[in-house]
Image 1 (cartoon, rainbow, N blue to C red):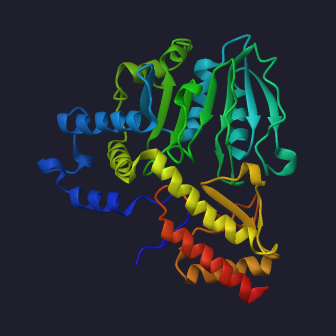
Image 2 (image 1 turned 90 degrees about the vertical axis):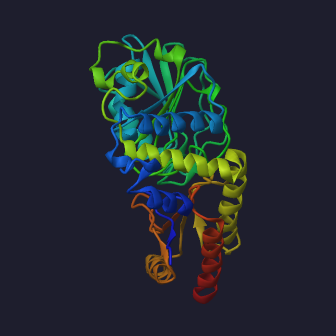
Length: 359
């Protein structure tokens, strides 16, 4: 029996994708080899690579004015690579702080130039997406950085800033979970291990016009133009992770695309939030109503003893990965695209039952 996988990342991968990968594992496309064994310069792998690129463009509506790159190092490398390339002298990188990953991105940017925090919800333990900020005096801005979804705190941007300076978003934990207007952003980056596939590949979607402003005086492997010129094949890419990414993208398309996936995600999250909201305070959501995430649902119970009991009984029922992050405590259900609706409904039912038995 498959577990009800609510891990925050690496996270659930669609079962049909895993089964297809299993089927093709030792003999991909009649090559007599696994994808992991193919040369990254071979025609068979090139088709996989380009298919992943074209599917992502199709699903997100990425225009030809943008590049799609497959890089390594996770979002964590992007924290450094972005300011290294785009934080020019006499410019400022602006940040809206909504969680731990915003903090990490800011920390790295400070090593390369001037930074400024426009707004932060840290004093409220990141319970909401900051709304009290002004973009009026950001003319000196190299870019504005946001984290679109915050896995630890269970918050998510519903409306993105309309900025006169380049807008950059870390979408590692909610890319493909809902429809977005790519053209609002100059650069989007996302580690794969939440909604795109296994860990190992990082997707970067960047406006060509923005890429032209990059500092060229950086190490070759950390220069975006290197990867643009070489179709993300300058060095050996994470070929198996990109193959898995292409299968996940096919699966999203088969579901009906991002619009349909968003509808399902809203139903999934709605079932669990309903169990919280109708518990008469037994469960308390960490995130405020206007900032609730579709991907990470954080909540607490009345005390630590009940929390431990809840997690133990949940594990016995095959619910995995529900312990909250130490920064928030309590519980967290990560309901990424690959988590079936049935799993979320089963969790909501268990939550109701546990409340009734322990109130």
